[in-house]
Length: 400
Image (cartoon, rainbow, N blue to C red; front, side, top):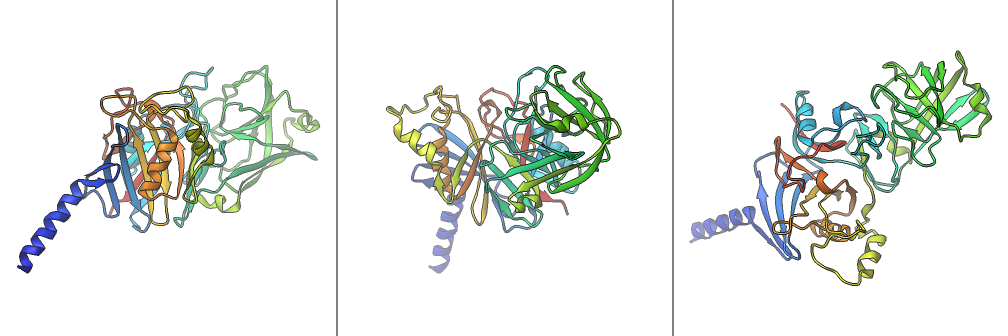
């Protein structure tokens, strides 16, 4: 009798592994033997016709890691998530198990800036782009600590007796960014317009650029032609013509100065991998108040309806969340009415809470939303094919 009870219990356990009924849908487990501490499943959400793909990584499994990757190993350019994952695996020390698309930027041409990233990206300890939405950032330190507090870059360029604020790193000229630093990580040249600023070729800066960076530099040349070539062992400072600072006249060939850069709060200077999105979904287990207000103010909710207000529109989505024990990567399929309509950001945040996340950020969505496992695209991107994107997020495993 005891053997019969044990067999029945085992059968019941096996059934729950393959299909777990939820109050609002059903989970179908995928790749159950992929790696210890990693759980993957498809979640068919019944409240509306929506399909999600979820990866849950245990934060206590020492062989699993969070990483990010840059398309084509530079800021300017695009690449598929699969290609980035394959390139990472080829390094030989770790294998990419799960990969999803990353942050936001310019996917179109945008006057030569097609493929430029416009959100935080720190990779292997190198600061490649600075945070733009300071609330929607996530980072992991070398010791495995998770960070999602608001983060800012505080940077300056000293020349002579003057100090100029440095607003951007390796990005197109964003509003309010009057001084930008371009390192070789951007690409071959700055793609700037000569009518809008001057450029200073500088040397003496050890690369790669890192958080908490203080180093002297030397001015090698000053140009007003725009689109300067970025030296492989140096950098280019772009200064807007709108900047009214007498220190600008101090930039002459042979002059010396100091570049200072740090992230705040200071714990962010210890991040090894970090990524930025747009809009924080969860903080301390609560949904972003803006999303809550917009959701309740909506006069009529139509399941699956796309809207001009993207927060309220049902769209494909990608998100990253975590709690004290687990990292969550989620991709939501959408724009396919008979299969999956997508989610509003409020619905996405609600599902993250249901799954157990306490903190979460929104990553790029739409046709970019991609969920890759073992070098295969598992979800159904809305563009009917895998789209080239700007960066990616990985769960990797040590190779023995």
